[in-house]
Image (cartoon, rainbow, N blue to C red; front, top):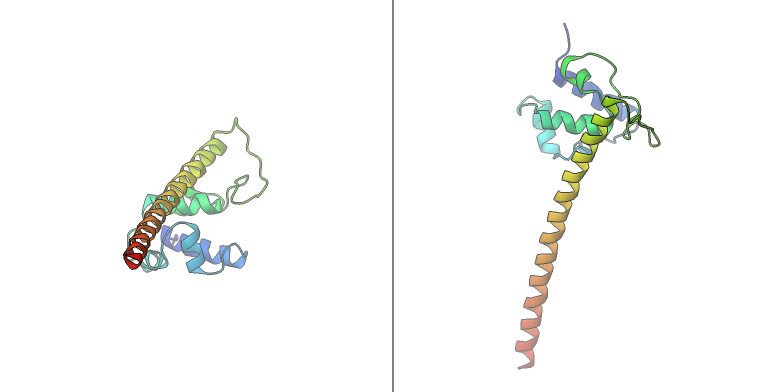
Length: 141
C-alpha cells in the first residue's frame, strides 16, 4: 500500500532529524513558520494538510512537492539553497526559477511578519516611554 502525504511528511521529519537539519519537531515547526501545536495537529490528522503547509516544508528544506503529494521522484531537490548552501541555479532551468521564486515569496512573507512584530514592539515602547514621562512630570509637580 502506498504511503499518504502525511506519512511521507513524517518520514521527511525523521530524515531531517537523522541528517541533523532539525533538532526535533518543535525546531521543524519553527523553521517552516508554524507552531508546534499546529504541527502536532497536522501529524495526528486533527488539522487538514494545506498547500501552504506543504509549500513551507518544500521551500525551507528543499523537499520535492511531487514527492510529498504523490510519492513520485526524489525526496530532496538538488541545487536549492535549502539543500546546498552554495548551490548554483541555472537561470534557463524553469524548475530552478520556480524554486527561487517560491523561496523569495516565502522569505518576503517572513520579513513582512517580522516588520509587523517590530512595529508593534516599537509602539508599545513609545507608549511605555510616554507613560513614564507623564509619571515623572507628576512626581516633580
